[in-house]
Image (cartoon, rainbow over all chains, first blue to last red; front, side, top):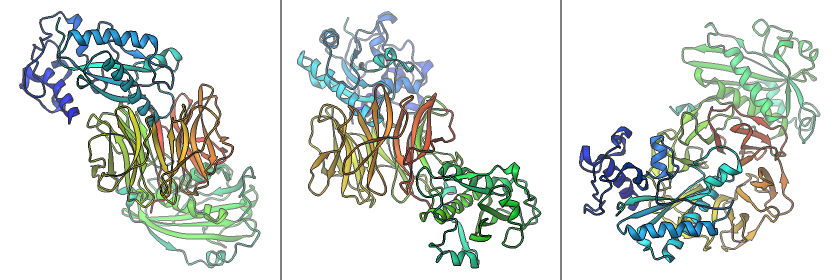
Length: 197
Length: 443
C-alpha cells in the first residue's frame, strides 16, 4: 500500500520530533509543522537524504504538502514560487505536453538528477468545467504524461508516482480562462528524499 | 439518524365508495387526462389546510405543514396550478372534510377544479392523517386515504398522498417519496455526500471524512449509496448503508477507482479503474473483485450507466479524440458510438424507461443538459447555455430530470420535466451542490 506509506511519511516529517514515529493523522497539528529538524526516516525505516533543516526556509518549498494534505489543513495547494519543481500546464480537455511544459519538465528532471534520493508524486489537475469523473480520468492522463516524459529524460519510474485530483482541488477558484488555465496542471510533490544542495 | 427514511408507515385504505368506483372509472372524462401531455394547461387545484380532528392543539402547525408539502410537490411536478391559499373562502377548521360536509361552490367560485382536503389527529408521537382528493366539477371524491405514522414524518405522508394524486391524474404514481443524494461543500471546503428530500427536508450527511467524496449513486433497493472517496488517500469505492450507518469499501483490490454504478439486479458494479494513466471499465462482484474487464482502450473510458434491463452500458470514451457517448452490449462486448454532435459529451444516465439517455454536453464555452434516444438520433438540448448545467439524473418514473447548475451563482440543484419544461431550483445547502443522484421509489 504505497499510498499509506506516503501519508505516513509526511507525518513522520511533521511528528518525528514529538512522537518519534508514524502517528494517526488526527494528531497532526499545523502549528507543530515549523522548524522540524532533519529527521529523514523513510517509510522503510532507513535514513537517507541530506536533510533540509540546515538550510534557510526559502528552499524547503519542495517539501510543500500534497494537495489533499493542503486541503485538509486548510492551506493553499499552490506550488510556491520558490519551489525547484515547477507546475506544467495543459490546454482544455488535452493531456499532450505543450512545448513550454516539456521545457519545464527538463528543468524538473535536472533537479531530480541532482537529488537522487528524492521521490516525487505527480498530481494531475483539471479546471472546474465538465464532469467530475471525466476530469479525474483526464487528470490521471496529465500526471502520466508528465511521468512518461520525465522517464524519457532518464528519471527512473520507481521514483515517480501519480495521482489525479481531477477538478476537485483548484488553486484558483474564479470562473475565468486565466483561472482555469492555472488549474489545468501537473504538480510535483516531493514525498521522500530531500534536496542535496 | 436515518431511520426517518425507513420508518414503517402504515397505510390504510379509506373505505370510501368513491375511491372504489375510481378503479373502473378510467374511461370517464373527469379529472383524469386533462393535464397529461406537454405544454398543456396546468390543472387548477386547491389544497386546503388540514382540519385538526383530534383533541391536542396544533402546536407544530401541522395543519398548514402537511398542506404546504403537498403544494410544494404539486408545483414541482409542473402539472398543477395551485390556487393561492389567501383566496380560499371556507374555514378549514370549521368545515367538513368528507363528501357532503362542505360546499363545492366555495371552491368552484375561486376557480378550483380539483380540491385536496384532509384532517389529522395527534396522539403522543403518532399522527393519523386522512386525505381526500375531490373533483369540484363533478362533485365527487376521487381518492380517500388514511395514514398512520410518526408526527415527525408528517411530510412523508404528504409526499405519499401527492404520489396518489399524480397517479390519479396520469396513471403513473408520482415520485415524491424519494430522495436525492448529492455532493456538497456546505459547511466547509470539503466535498461530502449528502441526502435530502426534494423539498430540502430530512437532510442527512452521509460522509464526514474531511476529504473529497464524489459521484454518489443509489443501489436499486434504495437502501445504500455507492460513492468514490479519497478518505484513504487513493480514490476507492465505498458503500454506505443508510439505515445501519455501516460503510464498507467495495473495491477490495488496490487500484484507483474513479467511480461506479450498481447494476439493476444489485449484483455487480460497473466501475472505472485507473492504472498508469489509462481508465477502463470493469465489472466488480459484490465483494469488489474484478469479474470482467469491459474495455481495453489506451484512452479514457469512464462514467458507465446501466440500461434498465442490465444488458447494456452507456459510457464515455475519448477513443475518437474527444469525449463521446458509447453503448456497450455486455453479452457481445461490442460498443457503438451514440453521440456525434459536439466535442464534449459526458455524464450519461440511462432513463428508467430505457428509451433515452441524458448527458452533459458542451455548447460553446458552456455546458448544457441533453437527451438523446438510446438508439441514436438527434440530441435535444434541455437547458440554456446562458449558464452551466451538468450531471443529469432521472426520477424513478423517467418523467423528471434533476441536475446541477450555476445559473444563480453557486452550483445548486434543479429539477425539470424530462421535456425541459418547468425548471425549478431545489432548496440550496449554502455550499456548492453538485452531482445529484435520484433514489428509486422508497417505501
